[in-house]
Length: 142
Ligand code: DQA
Image 1 (tube, rainbow, N blue to C red):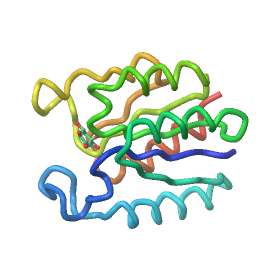
Image 2: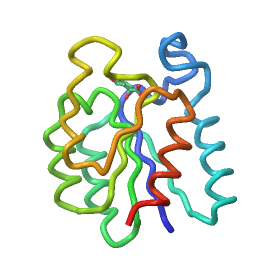
Image 3: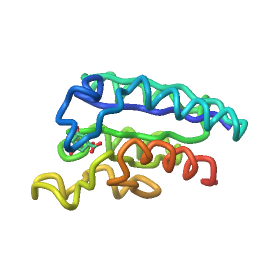
């Protein structure tokens, strides 16, 4: 099982960025925890972050034939990106939407996810644990 973790804009700042909302773990710490759990479950993980919408689109496109599932924290692009939504729909790889914070308990503009309809499901609000839950969901998808 090969799983691609993709992280969108500003997630490179985790640890220093609004810790009361996103927690104090860095993305590197989260990646290490995901890798440790994935190894226990005999899954292979690639883990990437970009601030660029087009780069995320390209990574989703090129995942076809190489990954069994995608776990995606699209960050702010969740709420704006038709391009990401179209890329997920185009490749047809089971994709799990994840968020550290509970987007439905925050500002109204975060309540709408443009990618949710083309994802298998959404995990939101469990902090760094959302990534582990995303891994478990990805392992379970067919
Ligand atoms: C986020 C939630 C988004 O609304 C926000 O723009 C982010 C992070 C989360 O993980 O909670 O950058 O995706």
